[in-house]
Amino acid sequence: MVIRVLMQRLLEHVRATFLSGISILQNEGLRPFIQAGLRELNLNHRGFYYYLNYLYKQSHGSYRTAEPFTIVNTDPQRIRYRAPRDIDRWKHVGEVRDGNWDYSSRTLEDSVKYRSVVDRFENGTPWKETDIYQETLERLENGETHWNGCRTVDDLERRIDHVERLYETIRKSGFKSQSELHSESVKSIVLSGAFDRSKTDVAVAVGRDGEFLFVDGNHRLAIAHVLGLEDMPVRVVVRHARWQNIREEITSADSKDELSDDAVRSLSHPDVRSVVDQNEF
Image (tube, rainbow, N blue to C red; front, top):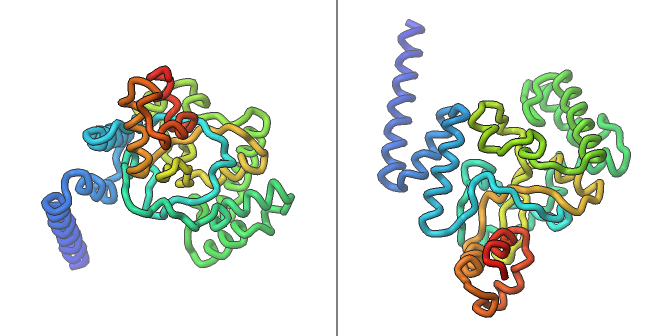
């Protein structure tokens, strides 16, 4: 009887998922359909890589967007506000969005992770007195998972050790991209199966005026700020349509004289440097 009920519920879930997928495909298109599928399926490393490239090629039809794993270097002090919560570091890679999403009032300090890392390494506060430690402890006591998957106090202590080691590594060796750390391209890392989606470069979005908005990587960005670093690799996930139009203008121009004032002012921006180098302005 129990097995029959479970099987019935499973079939109902499969049917509902199938019908939902068909509806999304018919009404919203292939890309949202695949994105919805990601919420139901845990893709292996190869499937995940090819999915990201699919997103890139879909966006490439209208815009010359950057390849999904392209890294740009910027001053971390330029990143002070957070992108909207709905921007995902992977699912929205290569997107170009219009609208007012880039008018953000969410500061980095709104994150308990960011706040606690700064409190620990800038102010010398013991971990057990930080907000993230107290918050995680409370969640664990309620049987919940928190702070990057901590399920037990031992997990919490291991998480603290990890952040401490991360701080020391960046302090001694500087901030390195995943490609630099592994001495090979991210593409190779992903296809080899050695890729961990949780251990990726700091992700950002770019607003209409070229402002970097934080998407993912609280610990590393906070450490970069505490150490006063002036250069950090980041991966651009989403760009505002107006900003992308400026990049398009620069890409298409044969000379600097053809550029608008906005484009000329943007020539030194990290997100257009490769284009500038290519056009030899």
